[in-house]
Length: 414
Image (cartoon, rainbow, N blue to C red; front, side, top):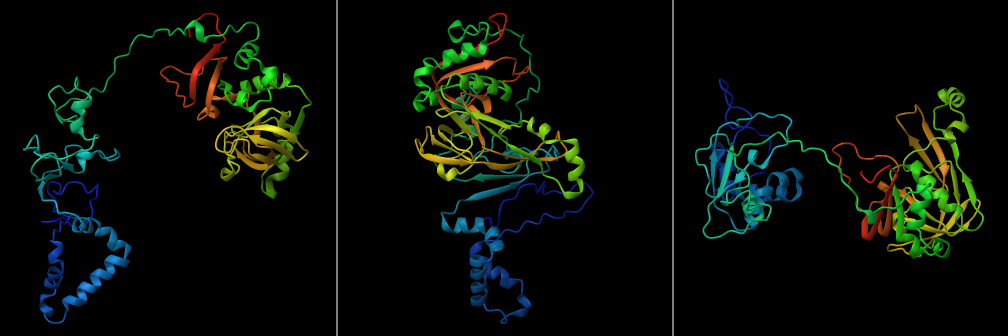
């Protein structure tokens, strides 16, 4: 026989509950080559009225043009187009576990198990066995490979999953211990840790502050935007030249019925003080030959994506010019205008409308913004603990050999 139709999960057991009649699960198995004869047999009382040729044309038309028919005939078509595999079907009783909301696992749907290791299992619904001769190539994700990957766990070559293996649902809490960072990875914070880490990461800064290759190869990483602003402002003071400050235009995005009352409760001066992740601040102070980073996707087709670093070349009243640093669009010149952003936050009962350049200085950046960057020299500045008990730091930044961490603490244990 050949299976027709499509495999479905969540069908449940083919056996009805105790005391009830079967329903909702009728199993039809036909040979595709006899499909026309089977359909004609349903109308045996109308012999001579149905033409097999016409019925064949109708089936071919539906198979070709009807999307629903294509779905339900997918398995049949695959078997017709390829070599037919001989199968045997065995049906067992209901599952021993009724888990309504758990995702189904492969052993609860259907399993291809050559030479079933326990022939008398009663808690499987359907088992499909391949009947074949000789060796068969299987994927490395198959449970049969577990004995090769983990020989200490499965020394006898048994399957990685077995229904008789008990599950240990508890864990033994290991005693807490301190991790000591090697001295060569630490910087003496001194009286001003920001100055100490900036001088170490951006060594010879006065001679290289305008070189894109120098700026793109290093950065200071820190957890919060407030600390990022502190470090960036310190580095900006070390750049020669006049600075330009751009102020945002902030307002409330409200209906006309509530606009007056909200304007009185939340004046513009208050809106200017609000900061959000991924949103430029009210005040943006930069200079020519300073590196900035885009905070949002602006024009991905031109390489202007969230996290793109840009070297400022010109500052206008309503625009900023710069060159992209690094990546496929390295040295491409671009003009950045002000953009209007609508910012929502559950903390506030309004939508903030802010018009500002989507830029921020990037001598320092948050851990999230540093993901995906390729850096040669990184300083990690943690003025306060950032990982709670049990957390594991995850970082996707590509690092080359020199990585330096600095942390404000009274001893070398962290």
